Length: 199
Image 1 (cartoon, rainbow, N blue to C red):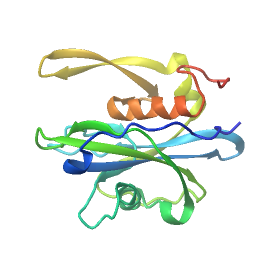
Image 2: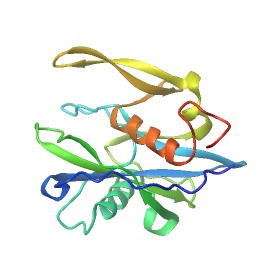
Image 3: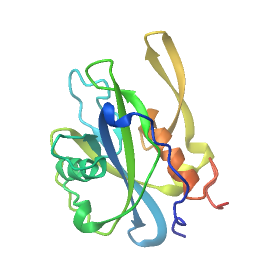
Image 4: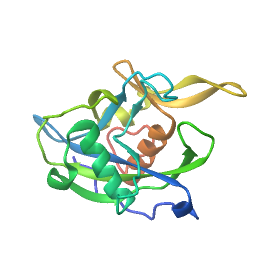
């Protein structure tokens, strides 16, 4: 069954308009040949020197530019640039999720990231730019399955820490992307680690 309507008020970080802004697109679709089974799109970032998230799994998106009228427009532009997927033509906007506070990539200054949810109605044709190594559609049931939830060790300035993650065919979804995923599952009616029933 497809996800029920996503509802609830997302968190909006105060003074976000005074900080650097970024936005990502959480894109879902019916799994081809398996109507009613949903899957989410993730991209694996290209290996790049100096990129602290080099090779990580993430949602398409990036920094808001001065000529982007809104963060949502930035998510749509960045998705097109990175993947070739045109959300303005073949995507249906559904809702924003909660803001996340992080730091800018190359300096320790705050940045707000806003996720926007879309249903995808286009085909599988993609055009990846230099920032993207690959795209992966992951079944929602896998992402919600308790046996796929794990932990990873991350080296921080204060030492090694254990962080929650989800694993799929050698990929690891963690950090902000994992946090956004958990909110998406919860708002869609899935309990954490629940594959076959909704609240």
